[in-house]
Image 1 (tube, rainbow, N blue to C red):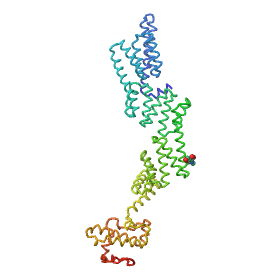
Image 2: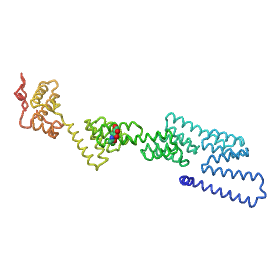
Image 3: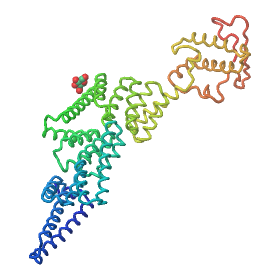
Image 4: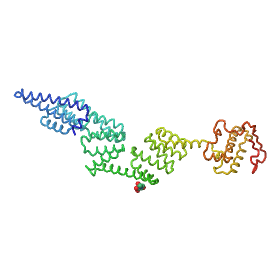
Length: 484
Ligand SMILES: *[C@@H]1O[C@H](CO)[C@@H](O)[C@H](O)[C@H]1NC(C)=O
């Protein structure tokens, strides 16, 4: 375990280790010289300072091994033996600060300053201690009030600068990293804790939770299970474990129902699964997509649109969700929206022929929607009979004849032209059939530019005349006074 720690510590630890070995070497050398040459001359005080040096060496070794309580025990007994051993107080204060036992640390600094009044290094460290204490308090308060980003700033100061061995602070940092969705950092932070104490239940819980939010569910389950083997009654671990199991069960049930074509059941199961943990985006993105597909199949365009958009809000590059939302938009007759979604799906996945097919379908629907609706212009239904068509045409032509609309002649002429164009198509069985089947028969007609012009005539000298006096031709009179 300790060897692994050193390897992971990288360059810094290696350097520190080298320095440490060097110190040991020098100390050994001095020690040997004392033994061999000076032994008879060694005075009581010298022995004492030699003891102290060895003591502090052991202490600093313990700290390197992160055996803080061992180091503290040594210092405490040294202080008991010699209450005037000032350096022991400052060492003790520094260790207590690192493990964030701030009140005891302050007491120890004060003892040191009683023995060495005005010592500037100790005064500086004491003020750093106060900063550490207040940073930890601020981080806790900000965590409680939900300001996670700010809390994280304070806790980093505590963990990185003042109290690197403060497990309270490390746990808070891990919680904050999860709250700010920085799951991989939470995994490393809890990894460090577990390296020192691999049975730490809170660290197992937090690490499991970080893996869970990354949708790495198997690894999450392994962490929860390990914790539960150590303490089967751990409330939070039990809760997390069963909640995850339940989510996976609901998800499977939704997917199975969907694949067996039980679409209505699948919708209910997807919704139930989504309700379990609304902030679990990494997993819910799949549930939303599954729901969106089922809703498209059911023809529920508006609901499908909502679900597909949820997917794209989480991951805007999901080609499948773009295609499905395109289909949903076709269902709600948002032709332009459908074309836009399908185009961006086709751009993201240029090889996918099925995407191209749906895109072409959407483009055709858009084009159809953009051509004039002759039925609507004549104010008749798509199933109108020929005589109904004629009747509607005559009535409208009469109403909009330019001669009868001298006050708004221009508008009336346009309207009149449109009515005539509608009749040109719908009044002809063959053209009407082709129009109904979506064929493109209205080249140049009504689609802007030169359009069909009942007034202009085609160079055949067909003069537009309109005789309309008295009774407009009813019944079999055909077009009566209309000459095109
Ligand atoms: C479909 O859903 C129901 C619950 O509504 C569930 O009991 C059933 O197991 C599911 N069917 C399949 C094939 O998963």
